[in-house]
Amino acid sequence: MNADLLKQHLKREGATLVGIGDISEALSSEIMHLNRGIAIAVNRNLNRGTVEILSRLQGLAVAWLSVRGFRNLSIPPDSDRQKDKLITKLYKLFCHKTAATCSGLGWVGKNGLVINREYGSKLSWATVLTNAPLLPDRPIRESECGDCDLCVRHCPSGAVTGHHWSVREHGKKLVAYEKCAALKNVRQSIEGKPNCGFCVTVCPYSRNGKKKAANS
Ligand code: SF4
Ligand code: SF4
Image (cartoon, rainbow, N blue to C red):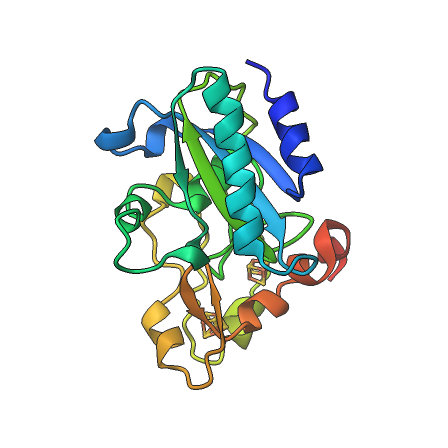
């Protein structure tokens, strides 16, 4: 089933990127029947209120799927993970990084965040799982950080281990988040993790996109 109409619809409504991932390998038994992940990304630099935008886009995707008779499950943006909500239990079932990498929109960088070739880690993510047989995009299965180690060298707490991510070894610890959390003046939260921001701003993909990253 061609997903172009859905992608165009969400982009017209404000999505920066939309991808379709075959997420069969990553599903727990509770949600095994929902084997397509619609990864939706919004550029944090251009948009205020990314949580609201992503929530609205998820609603549009759900409506698109429902009217065609398909089942779906929305996984909210990480920064909207409010405790004590029933929906919080869904978060443990699925990680946005899985939909992003399975749909070819990025890899997990040494900084532990999704890196997109054009936008780096300056994207916020939400996912809609579905049983619609949407044609999946080509996945990214290995890190494209290469020899770069800027986030390793510049991390003020020594939290970035320097390991390369790959689907085959997804259990590797990339970032010691307890070290981030111990930093004083932690002021941002990306993907629900404590964040001082250096490992985003220093990344050549976040600063310049693909073209300049290759030259830096
Ligand atoms: S958020 Fe700050 S402390 Fe944590 S890994 Fe990134 S640079 Fe290091
Ligand atoms: S700074 Fe370099 S090593 Fe770190 S995530 Fe970006 S590209 Fe990868």
